[in-house]
Amino acid sequence: MARTLTILTSTIFMFFIFSTLAAAKSARFSRSLSPTSIGLKKEKLSHLRFYFHDIVSGQNPTAIKVAEAETTKNSSTLFGATVMIDDPLTVGPKITSKLIGRAQGIYASASQTDTGLLMVMNFAFLEGKHNGSTLSVLGRNKVFSTVRELPIVGGSGVFRFARGYAQARTHWFDLKTGDAIVEYNVYVFHY
Image (tube, rainbow, N blue to C red):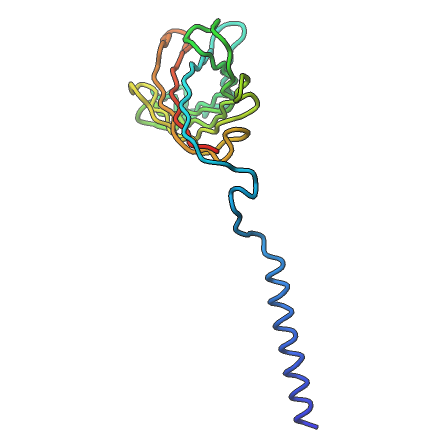
């Protein structure tokens, strides 16, 4: 009888262990996939060049300060100032040149020692084969450097699984108003 009870207990215990392992295996939340199984083709490298118009002055600004710290006004770098943007992206440096998208997001003064912005934005494209697609930028922009490099951390649409970098060069800056035109050269891997 004791032997039968031991065998029965062992069998129930083993059943419980195997059931638990089977349930754990079926309940996993990730699996490996082939890129082709979700429609991805050959990876390519694209170069995009456009102009970013940051307009903070006038009747219809595209960049608006939404927050600042009490100490921001006393800071030589405007540390703590946070700006929401919906800036036009154009083919050429003139605001009247063809609109190809918008830079939408936030930039904030994130340095107490130099003019370094934290840029968190999407380039939302409105034209041609890129229409409806985005590239996501997250990085530091030391605005008074001749060339700044910002990482491309993702994208959507034709830029799904994007990674790369953007080089920003100030084309024009009005010290009185704060308005600026910045040339962007973006190099991005995508499928």
